[in-house]
Length: 198
Image (tube, rainbow, N blue to C red; front, side, top):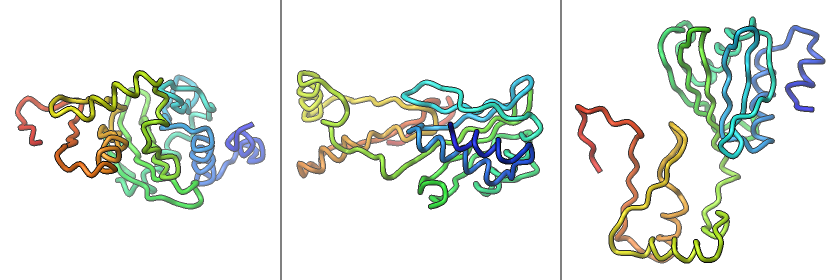
């Protein structure tokens, strides 16, 4: 049973919002999730976590808690609490009470109210070794060969708002004292009237 479910059972229908949000984040961190999606559905608040790229339901909450949860997360990310009809994005610094993770919080309006997406950055779970990425021996050999090439492009797509620059590639190159490589990152959507500077 998740911490959130246990807390809701003991709160007897009157949960403290700060504690509830902390339980949601801790459940997501414990499960190894990369992000949390909180959105109002027709009759409940759906809380889902992304595990290995797939959203899985964590818990459903009473719909009347949505404004309070949104308000709490906005305060944590230093956002404008009274604005509900514009997108906002902010950062909640690492907090030991939340497992030491940093949170990037996005809020945007929908037809049923605000949707919240919390991206989790856990410094303890960063892997920089190519051998830890799950390549088979032949694929790893080809990948390392590509990294050593003098020309070419290596693309590493990711979720929106996550770092597109793969951290393990610079670590691989730096470990071999190479300084002749660049690792730019680009947003998934570049406005047509903008100039992309590398």
